[in-house]
Length: 159
Image 1 (cartoon, rainbow, N blue to C red):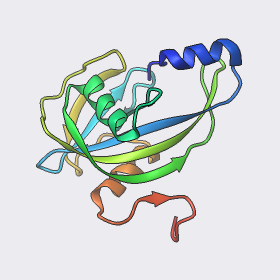
Image 2 (spheres, rainbow, N blue to C red):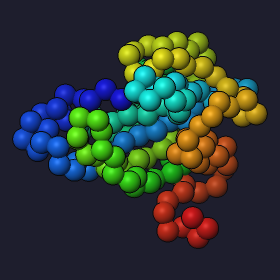
Image 3 (cartoon, rainbow, N blue to C red):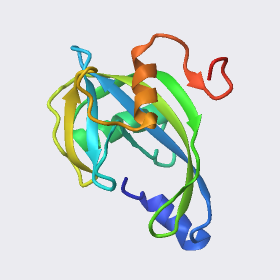
């Protein structure tokens, strides 16, 4: 994930100390039920699309923007599927971040997908029975995006 300018500005004063930041994730489905994934440039792993909202940007707008910026796909956010406070992450440069992730189920308005920035190595549509290896993070969100139940959050019965 590219570091937004506003975080670079914060880091100039905060150094490497923990920053608690908003994050968004998008589980994008097409009309055939396939899910949009990107192979991340920073890790080489396949995942759902996500990023950091800009100051003043609504979370759903940020999710839609991130999908378009990374894949060229236009989508609409249908609903919140999950809210999750993630564990802190320490990056190679020593920066520490902890993200509050808001995940959205999105509907694709277009299905032509391509690598649209330097954050992805590949992008593509996958049937649910042909997914590449994915993290628990991505699989939980895809599962929740397929269901019509309430949004998931820690502390829910069965969570």
